[in-house]
Length: 216
Image (cartoon, rainbow, N blue to C red; front, side):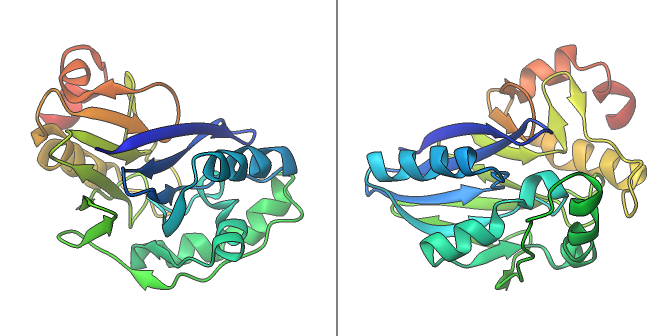
């Protein structure tokens, strides 16, 4: 059974996730930790739980989701996995880091490119990958269908959806991703978003004011 630990890091209040199972293997998704205290919070949890980090995953490469990539790679000796379409965004983070007040950000090169139909295995657990562009051109979501959980990044939030007014974003692609990917997950799927509290697919179908016009 997958255990999910949520950390909220940096000035953007970004959710970083550590997923682990009974084998004590774990993966880190979207490490937004920049300050020393944030990194210490992450490493303390991993140490206290006696976890072994096997993968570093990015749903997408916007600055708030990748501030801790270099730290995690160096500290745990793991590879970075993301979608190839995120390379232009990842390469632009260094300049944005200066603009947003993160002068000590260290760029990180990806090690492996992943896409829909690929799978990430850690311990006895498997995550399926959904390609859900729109908020970002190479945005991914990670799904475990057995437990009905989805790490959605910034595609779907509690009562909101991802912005599509950034460079390389696409409102058309966001609509397609929500309608043809996220919307088709079981209604009791628990969604762990990139910002804010958890929700479910069913709740968002009923109460999210942005969903109906996007999926029609």
